[in-house]
Length: 250
Image 1 (cartoon, one colour):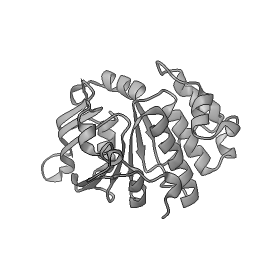
Image 2 (tube, one colour; image 1 turned 30 degrees about the vertical axis):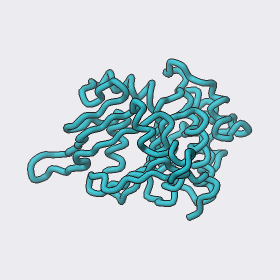
Image 3 (cartoon, helix red, strand yellow; image 1 turned 90 degrees about the horizontal axis):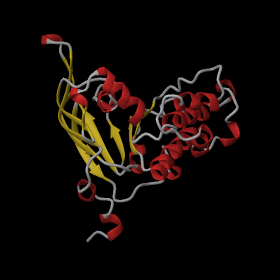
Image 4 (cartoon, helix red, strand yellow; image 1 turned 120 degrees about the vertical axis):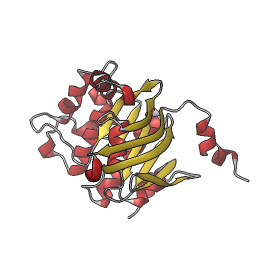
């Protein structure tokens, strides 16, 4: 019989809460006729506040397509895609822009920092368009860069630049943090530092966090792990206990 601590982390408990994302039959097709590419097919998924979800799969499995749809960067071909009570599948570009601006933080494999701005200034850019941002200094403190905030990207290591990118993503207090291969360009030691920053955001801010990765080891730190293949979720499991990022090795 599972302990109370274990039971509190199981999916049935999460399912009693209203989901942040409610997805049913989600499909994305590019092209038409014989040239059609079915990037995502009939995906069902619910995600909840504070949950840490890792999405695994080979290149071309549909991971990035799923993240792009959840993030409002693309629109589904068919199916239901709701963020809280908002139907993203029926939203126009203005509504999607507001959704991305106010609700979602993005972290990609490449940092896309502005070279002529300091870390603090790169993060501060987002505060100018967010309705209720934290201070740039607070966001940089959360990712462990208080001592480096006045350095330019060229003066920072790859891992530090990625942590600036994370600070930039979370300074607007997003409900959702979407990370696409956030450690893909980093060595193991630096990658773990970056994962620790993402872990801290998820824990301290209660941000729903989805990380897509080729690295199966990262799945050990998730509440739930989804495996995609050919546009389908072929396997889903919950971890009874989440591993700390500091304890990962690959």
